[in-house]
Length: 266
Image 1 (tube, rainbow, N blue to C red):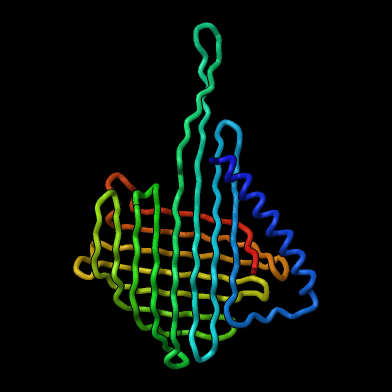
Image 2 (image 1 turned 90 degrees about the vertical axis):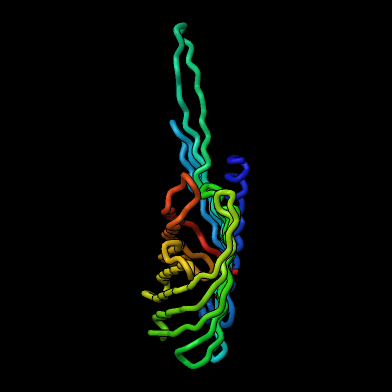
């Protein structure tokens, strides 16, 4: 499977880069003024070889945008996969060497997410937020959330946006083979900073405690930087941290991921 993923990811990056360069030449004389919704495709690949072989691949699709006085949309999907192969060489009494390989899946998860805001006043909004997650390594067969709420922009201008959100959400999950569902509370924060003309920083934090048991909670944080290479291509580095205070049996509470790749504006 690793070889197929390597080939497919490499081809996807090559095709994306070629298409992006062609579009960028046509738009070179035009000023970039995004309006409405903007969609971007992200892909990354990391490989090592030698005494150990590793593969880490990720792909994602994200749509976001805002219309003044109406509201905004942030939605997307992402998939991450990683595996490692460790080679061990042993020599028997006759001097014959034997190479053994041990494969281990290190990452396999997928996520869908959507957040839709409706403007109430220049600084306030109502929202509907939903997500669906699968994580094989963390033994999460599924985890889905859906709920409405209210939000407030503490800062909102052309360079920076800082928003807070709060509301109820319902959670359905199957973790470690056990199904569960309950009412939770959702508290979220998101900060976007257009630090430079061609560079943007995005940071978010989400806290979901069970309404009747605050010891059962999820905490998800993310911070990333995007830097434009040209009109269509950009480099993207994202650090994600997922904390589950009551994980599946035998699993760690915390999962940390560093993702780097290339983005293509569609």
